[in-house]
Amino acid sequence: MSANHASGTLVQALPLRRDVVVIGGGIVGLASAYELARRGVSVLLIEQDRVGSKQSGRNLGFVRQQGRALPELPIMMEANRRWRSLSGELGKDVEWVMGGNLRLTNDPGLAASYESWVKVAASLGLDSRVVSDQEIASILGARRDKWLLGIFTASDGHADPQATCAAYESAARSHGVEIVEGARVVAMSSAGGHVTGVVTPMGEVTAGAVVLAAGAGSAKLVAQLGPRLPQRLVRQSVILTSPVERVTDAAAWTGELFVRQDLRGSLRLASATRNEIVLEPGAVRDAPRYLSSYLANRSQLKLRLDGASLARALARALHGAGGDEYAPRAVASDVARCLAAAHRIYPQLGELTLLRAWAGEIDATPDALGVIDAPPSHPGLVIATAMSGHGFGTSPAVGSIVASLVEGREPGFDLKAFRLDRFSDGSHLEPAHLL
Ligand SMILES: Cc1cc2nc3c(=O)[nH]c(=O)nc-3n(C[C@H](O)[C@H](O)[C@H](O)COP(=O)(O)OP(=O)(O)OC[C@H]3O[C@@H](n4cnc5c(N)ncnc54)[C@H](O)[C@@H]3O)c2cc1C
Image 1 (spheres, rainbow, N blue to C red):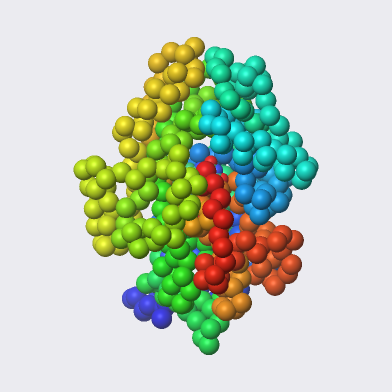
Image 2: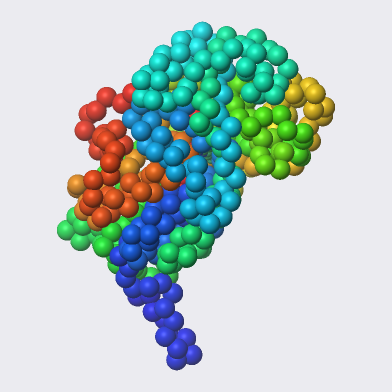
């Protein structure tokens, strides 16, 4: 099926068989392919667009243990350990800065939950602590302001999303991973419940195992096999300013704004309160399932029903219907708000100028935890997807977990909270924080 005869030459678009096929060239697929190849497994990674073109190349680059849901924390602590030497390991600079993660609030309810989180984190050996106003001003490099509470984890950091994807890509290739871009997996093939490979318009590839790491494209592929993976999207605009004098090494969340300063001096900003629930047909159907998550994250989410939002929803639906790639754009009013908010925090920098703005769509489950699972109902399938706004930071550890699951080895983490069937076995889902 994947062989064509052109001018008498046999043209083979895709290999007929590999040990493992990875679907999706985001950070999760790339890290998984890299880890598998390091263990001597032959891997083909199939990406419908360009590697790192979706969430993984568009995110803020926060790498934080601070504020993580408890089931995710051990995975993130291991990922943090890996981030510290990731540039050396992958042979390319991922722009890791261990400048800490700062979280501020003036909301009494959040302040109480942050304080109790710090106590639990300390019991797990994490260096999170409550910080004074004076320390906040110095960590943030901002004029002094009054905050009800600030917490800080010095061992957290940030990295550049595109540089990290590029580093994983080149390390994966150098370990022998074959990466095909511009090919969409339309289905996973199966026989008697076993997943046996993938189908693309360019041919079929059989494999001993398939790793599903297709981000927002995962739910559709899982549904074809039977199970349902609830996955809804939240759009966030990201703003990059022209370089300014160094103000902070931390990645900070002020309650209103996310801010980090990259190695070139640019501030990377996003609104913490205007993340847009993406309007798509399934959003209405899934609303009851997501209600508790929406409520838990309501200070950060917006449901926009104005003309511009409806036009965006229509454009999205039309692109989807045509099978084209939809590249979400930054919302202009969010860009202006973020620049104004950053100016209020950093009046000493004068007028901030926009270098670039874009948007990304976060794939979220009802409990804002990803799915990392080798579902017993479908041998041959390993799922690592729907990371719910947390997947950049956890990726170095998730890649190793995926490799262990593929090899049938003990992954070293309790993955109960991440299993696929929690959405269908009547489990009570406690919503975690999306961002
Ligand atoms: C604006 C924004 C800010 C964020 N900030 C942070 C942050 O600061 N820290 C953090 O840890 N996380 C953050 N996140 C979340 C993080 O980016 C994601 O959790 C992570 O990138 C998910 O990686 P992924 O590989 O699962 O998905 P993706 O990066 O979306 O990759 C999936 C890939 O699969 C491909 N694909 C889909 N369907 C198919 C198919 N049928 N066939 C072939 N290929 C397919 C897609 O084209 C895509 O390239 C943010 C996300 C966004 C959007």
